[in-house]
Length: 280
Image 1 (cartoon, rainbow, N blue to C red):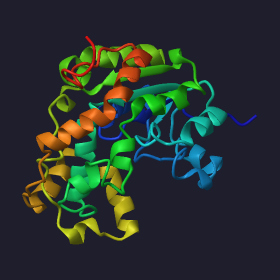
Image 2 (cartoon, rainbow, N blue to C red):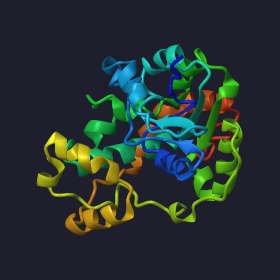
Image 3 (cartoon, rainbow, N blue to C red):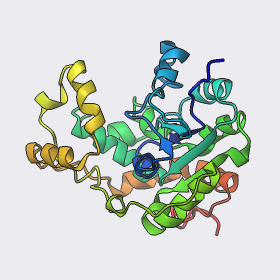
């Protein structure tokens, strides 16, 4: 009988919440297999079929725990049902960031790529935006409700962005416990404050518009220190549109109710995300 090679765990997001960090920590282990780049199978690539998805894990060695990371799964309306149909016993890891900061980071990333303009209010003001992803992706409680309809709460581990910065060893240990694998020391080369999207250099347009086959070759190199150093050498400094106090206030109001529900849903104190707004 053919033994199917499919993930036992999924890192589901959120986008712009440092999911790359936990993926690196797990990928660097001999007893874990985590392919890259992100497959996005249950969100964008579902029509490629199960055989294609399974082929991504063909290189896993016997005894390795198989997982995958696609940061857009958390906010995808279709992903929970699709994942549960194929991987009903999978463990889920979610990393969350202050949704206001997440939205701004997402905007800066697309600004750096030349996909959005400098009028930040046009993208992050709920009354003006025609790009729902910036705001909708941070409605974590709404997204978790879909996942918890398909998976038991004990299958889900929620990590906060600030946890990684403040207690990386504890975070990694808790994830290892969820996955039933031994805890190992954190790779300290990765425990450093990553460059904020609002400070990252702007890559020339010619390089950002590489043909798809070239992009496919380059994608696995992202995150490699030598590659990133070369990229930053070619890139030029750029000033990103700032997040004004007025717009931050609007975003805080937009997310307030969702964060309050989320706090109860995941059992975490999130008052630091919404200062002077949430009940203590």
